[in-house]
Image (cartoon, rainbow, N blue to C red):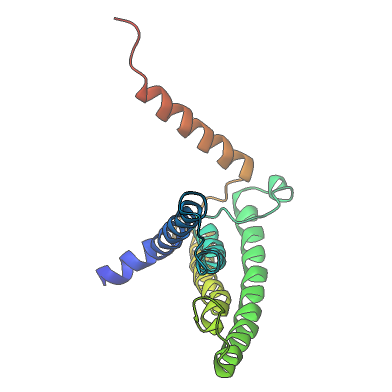
Length: 191
C-alpha cells in the first residue's frame, strides 16, 4: 500500500526528471562531441527527441495533478466556491472524454506500428514504443482527472475541501514564495 501511495504521489516527477536528465546529458554529449572532438554522435538527437516526446505527455498528467493545466478563468470569476467546483468538474469531464478518445486511437496507432516492426533509424528502437507515449501519458492524465473529479464530488457534498484557485492567484502565490525564499537567504544587514 505504501508503494502504491508513493507511486501515486511521485510517478510523474520521477519520469519527468529521468527523461529530462537523459535529454540534457545526451544533448551535452552531442555538443561536446561536435565542438570539442569534432565528430558527432549519430543517435543523440533521436534519443533526445524521443525523451522530449515522452516528457510532454507525462507533463500533461503532472499539470493536471497540480491543477496547473491550461484553462480559461474568465467564467470562474463569476461564481462562488461551489460554482467554481461545478465549472471545474465540467471542464474535467470534457478533458476526460478527450483523454479517453486519445488513449483509444493512440494505442491503436502504437500497436499497429509495433506490429509492423518499424524501428528508428539510429537507435533501432521500435517506433511503437515512442508512439506509446500518447496513450500512456493520456492514461495517467485520465487517472489524475478521475482523482480530481472524486475530490470535487466530495467537496460538493461537504466531505472534503477542494480549492479552485484562479491562475492569476496561483501566479501571485508562486511569486510571493520566490520573494519570501530569496529574502530568507539574504543575510541581515542590520547588526
